[in-house]
Amino acid sequence: MSVLDIPGEIVPLDKEQQGKLRRDFHPAELLLVCLNQICPRGPQQKPADSPPNPNQSSEELFHTLLNKLSQVLDFESKGNTITSMTVVKYEEKFTYVFASNQRKTPALKKAREGLSEILNILKSNLEASSKEPDTVIEERLMHKILWWNHVRVRSYLQFLSKELQRCMERCDSTPDATAAKEGLAKLAQSLPDLTDSKEKSDAYIQATARCIQAIQANRNTPLQKYISARSADDHNKLIKGGSWSNLQHVAGRLLSYRYAVEVLVHAHHTWAETDLFRDFEIKSVRSSEPYPAEANLLNAVPETADLILNRAPGSDKNRQALKKNAADLEKYELNKHLEQLWAAKAQEGMRPIVHCEILLHSWLLSTDGGVQSHRFFQGWRYIGTSKPLCRMCTEYFTAISTPVQFRAGHPNSYLNFRLPDPYVSPKQNGKVQRQKEARQRWCEDLGKMKGRVYASVAKVLEEKVAEWKRFDSNTYTDRVKSVNGDGGAGDVGLLARFLGGVNIKGT
Image (cartoon, rainbow, N blue to C red):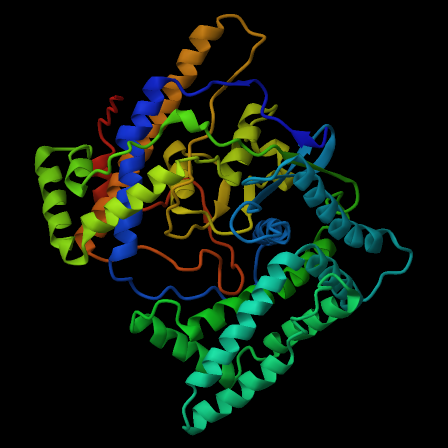
């Protein structure tokens, strides 16, 4: 089977677990998201360096390879196709195993086809009697990647076109601005015809590739320095959706496909004598299903910040300090915004999913070999992702102290996060007792997550500064920084205040 299921049967949420989520987890999560929406933003996060790092170790290159392969399978915006990937020995072959946030079986099949076509370009070159020049391989890879990602790429191009026009309108008559306007106009001329509906045609894809080349040619030029400076101004002036920062971001997203191609070509030379690109299989893990609507994971009546903070772990003195800090934020209408966010989510319904990196990690844990190093390619225990880990995923992996490494995360929290589902084997005796034990482990993990969410809440309340990144993907590309059990939100002092003796009571 090309679609892999986690072995066993899911242990469904019982009423006690639903009560824990409704009372102790989701309200704190909502408060954290609300705080990050209303508080001023912190220092600007510098974008990652753009070109692939030539000084990477072999292991770091492998990490980047898995991140880039995950990226090129993230075909669409809005989060459903966010992808994670690892390479393990499975059924006697090196196997690329990936998971996505929410892909149905037909969409998983298409993603496997896309990955197969990309990897087979590298395989064919390695097995050919005479090797193609790198430039030819790069061109073929770029064409294939842009073809499979045509929906996302078209949205990037449309966004780029709009922001180029807005930035040109914002250029004044100073010499630097005039020169920048000329450079922006030239870049706009490189765009493909966005009225052409045939975005999968060879001509359109070639025009898109030329546009990406034009973006690359502007790296490290006076124009790029001007854009970066204006983008910093947008941030410092707290301009939400500033044209210059938008332009820098979307140009970087398009350019990231170019760097993905370079990483793929470099990797296939590095491991030319292994089976990584010669004799492999491709498998996908089935995406999780949202909890049923009747799970009722959020009370219909919104709660105030005080009510939520009354359930924070720790001492009464600690809770009083949190509530005082929350009262200080009424100048930003904290409770009004919290009520609006709560009401919107209650109407929409809380339907959280297992994020793809947690899903893939759960599959590894439940299959032969678990997360032992011997089953991974070169012993490198790593799960790549198409985007940096969200805050909740980072906190989860830190809480469970997994030896597997992941891409460094961003500070954003999302309300669609949930813990991995507990499973039990239907073939073993004592099913009821094993279900009870599985639920208990789940509750222990939820208790750890509750403490970490409240630590994050406390950090924002105390500093009065949001921990939020407007774009949760890197502006350009990714120099490897990994998370594996140390990291997550909140400093050691905050975590110590919220992680001790957590006891969640359901309602």
